[in-house]
Length: 363
Ligand SMILES: Cc1cc2nc3c(=O)[nH]c(=O)nc-3n(C[C@H](O)[C@H](O)[C@H](O)COP(=O)(O)OP(=O)(O)OC[C@H]3O[C@@H](n4cnc5c(N)ncnc54)[C@H](O)[C@@H]3O)c2cc1C
Picture (cartoon, protein in one colour):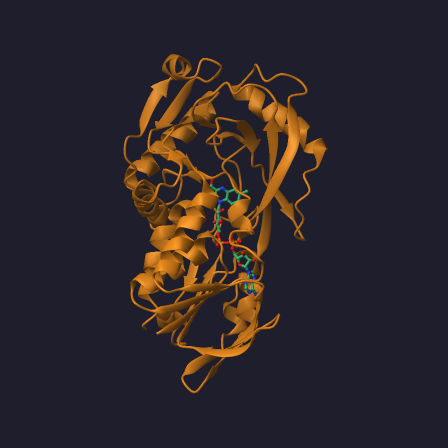
């Protein structure tokens, strides 16, 4: 089959690679001039364990399976990564209850190695930390996300696939048993047997530009912005440190990059329009939150860094959303797969999502 994947973020690239491995002829159309310029380059680059997500969700299933596949892929392709582990910390009794619940959910989700430890044991691991207890996740890690996307692209091209840059998809319609797709730029029109929409924050817009796809099936897009602050001093933690989760996110946590630098974020800011500025005034809330688990955070050490936007399907007062994959068996249009709401842990889940989506193409 001739397959068009819309979007060259981490999910589109993983879907394209999986489809090419099945023997399909694959083209990726990307509106920007490079891979991974969207959500995929504005995240924490954490390989998540998978303990947070409710039973039966796509996020839970793909995170755990995707994580295992991702570590294998990194080892086989020389993608820089480190299984540094993570502590989810409780600073009071109410938070302790919350992390017990996360441990339980992690066991249901089949997350390996989770262990509840006391405050002293946590401080023995991370001397600067204050907590009365913590959940240790040894399988959590960090990855060079761009190197990972380059490796996916390499595999795709080795399998005969191609990426067309500066090629925004403007619309697609069923014609003579195929999908007639219109491209902007110097693109024109081409026919494909199958189309996969992995356009991230653009997914709803792309879906609305398909007249055969019922508009009622296109979910709302809600922007859950996440701001990061960089830390100027010498890193004091060697593992990822997370507080208990908040509505819409995992809480302002310590993230590390592969060079060992520390930064903090992301928080959750509900916004109406795409905008990546980090408001320096948000630092006050960062200092307050971080000092609950790191009392030694010096004044004046945080600086606005970058922001990413989660493509959420639910708002602050609604229950947590899930990934949404709309398949031919569900909407009735052959060869069309739409992906919506691929927020965290989409990077961790990408290889597993890719394999599942490639499996729907022949239907
Ligand atoms: C703040 C934040 C922190 C996160 N942290 C983590 C983490 O630590 N670990 C984790 O596993 N996940 C994390 N995530 C989630 C993860 O980053 C995303 O799930 C993942 O990057 C989504 O990839 P994507 O390919 O779907 O989207 P994108 O990377 O946005 O790719 C979509 C692409 O489609 C292109 N496009 C859009 N419209 C069109 C069009 N009409 N035609 C052609 N191309 C188009 C865009 O240019 C873009 O390149 C985080 C997300 C955020 C926002």
